[in-house]
Length: 533
Image 1 (cartoon, rainbow, N blue to C red):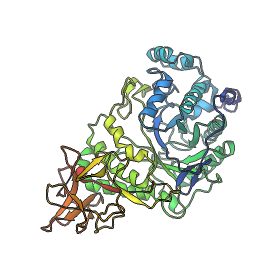
Image 2: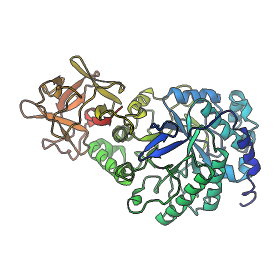
Image 3: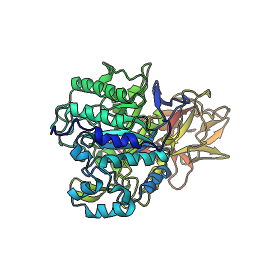
């Protein structure tokens, strides 16, 4: 196990000598809960996609399918400005892993088709070591102005995450000392590389060994290790329980000396909640999981001692046929849009070279299809439009207004002459701050949103008598009384882009959630998002 662990200088020298295709760097820092560009002081928003390079072959997925420049171009074309690029510790601490050529690494697993694919699409990579290849991918991303967050995903190259020995400090394949050497090696190798803006210390800590005392001990050591080697990098800290829990920071902050470089990360999936429960209790579950996110990590962006939060993994089955995923993602997007978080979608890859013994395994969560030709689900990518854009900027001198966001469609409300419709969130209509139980007013005007009747289009006029309440436990239904005193909810029409007002879905006459409901209330979910751009 210890053979050659400390003798990694030769393996890394190539990296240090080869960072020549760039000049200067692009360091980022933090200002309260925001990530900012050091040079301009302006806010930078990470809108990333995950791209794995940590599985057994230690090769970035997809290089056997398409040329590297084609893949990187697809990243930009599909709306991402950043990649969370994974690596395994052993690649950078054990020469018998890191010195393997791409060709030899593939041959170890009899991956002849993948080798032929790389020979066709990226022939210059075959004789590189896997460490050199990792750096070549980062170079290509940098050439195309794509930011990179380097994520230590596992120690031993493998799929994450199960009882695999990679879960927590002291597990069979997770030596804390070797992990620290790996962090130091990667931080040193990529120091001053202008594409690399930060390092994520460890993905999804988990398992029976996890405990807060060791978390504080090793996260402190890891953060200080990265900062000592590369003080320009953001230092990104993950939590416990598969990166779902940072709630313990409420009582004890992490003591690190990394200046204004500290960022926290979290993950949010639909895992563990069956589709049947989402179908029957959509409102209640959305309220529950959103509160859980606030309690466990969203609290970090609030208050006087706030930090940036990087939602470094979320995602859905992009075939569109998973009910739980489809309900959860609308709920998540409402919360992410309201908070204007930095984020990274899981994942880019349409396939894996080798995953859990399966060759050319399809990734149904992937942005790209199995052949890496086209986006698997362009409609889903369109839903990300409002979370891609910067809505809040701490340097803005403009007063705060609100965008009315419809998470199910991913679109925002526009007032166009006499019509009220949902369309692109760019240049959406602006609304003044809405007090619960008060009017919803067009910003800077005397005009208000009003209920006309059941099944009819709401009106915008100088009549501000409609008092809109946030109803259901989600706070995502907007309801007002019609002329007969009946509460109606704002809803996107199923057949076109227009809005109507209808009986509130899955909400009783008392404006509380029905215990169970066979209807899907998402058409009536709207979120008033603060903005000042």
